[in-house]
Amino acid sequence: MSSTVWWEGAEKTRVLIAPDSGCGGNKPGELLKLRHPKSENGTCYLFSNGMLQELQWFKQSYGSWLLGDYISEDGSLYMATPVDPVFILLPIFDEARMKKGEDLGKFRQLDEILFLEGYPGYQQLLSVAEKCMEIVCQTQEVGSMKFYRLDNSKVLAWLSCKVYCLKKTLPELDKNYAAQDEKQTLVDAVSIVGEYLKTEPWLKLLYDHLGLEFVDPTMKETNMENLSTTNENTTASSNSLQEKAKKKPGKQTKQAKVETGSKNIRDMFSRACKKKC
Image (cartoon, rainbow, N blue to C red; front, side, top):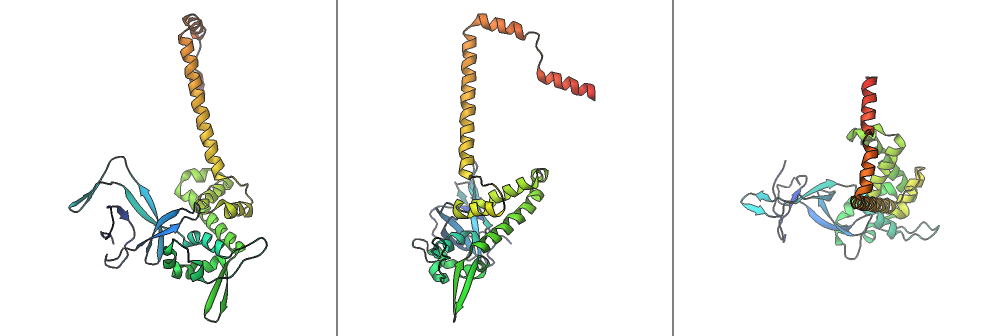
């Protein structure tokens, strides 16, 4: 079931597609400001019916929305998609245990762990953390109180499970993955999961745990930028040589004579192909 809900107090109108809250359209959910698990930047998430969702943003060059009798000039679209809250809470629990060296760290209560100055939204995730974080934590109960401490071995087991599930799903979503070898698909799956992990320590530990050679994502971006710059320089050099050739008609004519009887290599291959057929 879909419904249109106006968010009171919003400074500007935006269009958000999200699962129906099932509350008669009176309360679509809450927008929480949380830290992104990889970049640590403040990021907006939608929390509705106990489910945490991240926001994807799409925008065309030109466009607007017709919302009943109202026209929204901003034609951008936000889409809420479910995200595993363990990814979002992992850095918070890692910091909370205050691990130093070989020391495993401290056990702490959830309300302590989820208290972050400047991020009151984490307090809304208390019931969610209680349900999902035991899969990556050791717990101790003292009377009616429960204490949590992140466990590296549990985290790596959970991450490995995520990676292998994704590796199995990728070929079903894209035929290109079905054509490549399994190791490369595994690397691609780790790369996707790595978008929610800090390089230190989790991404490096995950690569090592799976027996893969670690590739720094930032180095990939740098190499791509260098390749782009090299291509631009090569193109510029080629254009410069062409301009110099135009300025020397004598040499240009001589070159033209040499190329008069030459054949296009593409034609040579096409003819060979025809003969074989």
